[in-house]
Image (tube, rainbow, N blue to C red):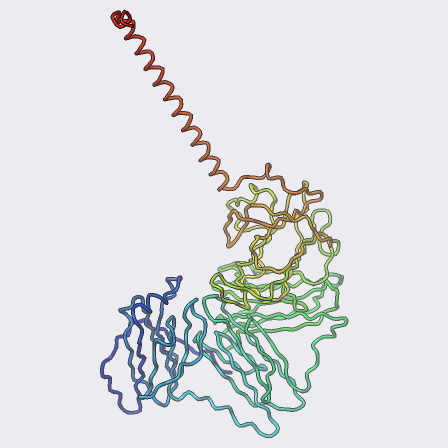
Length: 553
């Protein structure tokens, strides 16, 4: 097993060295900039925090970095590096035509490009002795090749592990394995929630010279290859359940999980297991299970009572429908074990819920084939906050949080907090409180959510009375007014009556301003009338006091 490499990041502004003379086995690295101030100004992104930078990482993972906040900061860079070692030069936020790389006096072709901001990429170029030659396999062996970029953990079989500590890097891993009468499982996963500001993780897997699988939209993924592989489940009468978990905590402890068939009266779980976490243990866990088709499943994961536990990311899916993929917070310094339950499969209200006090909520949604950011970039990943929904009280006033409430009754972020994949299916099944009145509860989705289609079912019956309204919704542990697609969840709900709904902040402000204008106009009219009346009274008084004026008239 290859242990996780330590990484030390040194932030410093690197000044240019003029006439640097390298000796011995060292060679001179030069980064020369040929950008004008006009080009600098015209290529600055709208995100002022996406500063251009230069990062140099040596063979021992030591890093030096400088950020260019102004044009005057952009000076040529030189440094002596060992010829027989591999170093990585990362340049971000500048057009590739505005800089050149030279090593040992020779021009170096700029390496792989990744997304950095809407105008300019980030590039990663290796210099020195970096060629990683594939091993020479025996006649009975085949070469496995994995090419990936991003912060990921690779698990092949149960022993090999490789870790990449540079976000903008292209990594290759090779292994010789038996060619015939074999089946292998490849696993890949990341402990970082995807950030749209960085390049997407991606990988390609080759076996014996042929492409087995490639993916550029994953938090976790797996692939089987070899001439002896069989389907994991009988798809005619079985469903495939996939569990992934990532936790690189250095303290030794165990997560426990169990999967139950709710139609089974037995108290024995259908499947169960433990996930050992700690130093020198793989942080990536994977488990597949075949369950009877059309079953209602309950998955429970628990964390021990301990202090300083990490925040694992885990994913749960059945037959390619994702039910949960979140970074879980089991509770720091908790004196009692923490747990979380996910319901999956074909469930009914009488088989899962207390019919006297609960209804069955079932949401199924499908993401679009393509997603675009505000700057026009296409992506196969959708940031989790671009799909916002909740199940909550219909009355806006009841949605206002009390001190003890920090979220809606159900919300999207409770189930997906990493990223959505395009062209994928997601589902949430929960028992919810039964409505006391006609419309105590409703399902609400923001009108601009990045979904292709969705359906809400209550006790197995699809609800169709969806209305466009303006209302309050929870997002990122905060509430705000926005346009919603509201589906009432009561017994005999009628379309929302705008006259009975609370006014939005904008509407209230408009009414207040209009009232103030009318009041000001009324005051002006009263003042003018009073002034005119006083003038007339003064004029009449003067007429009475001046008899000559009356005679002349």
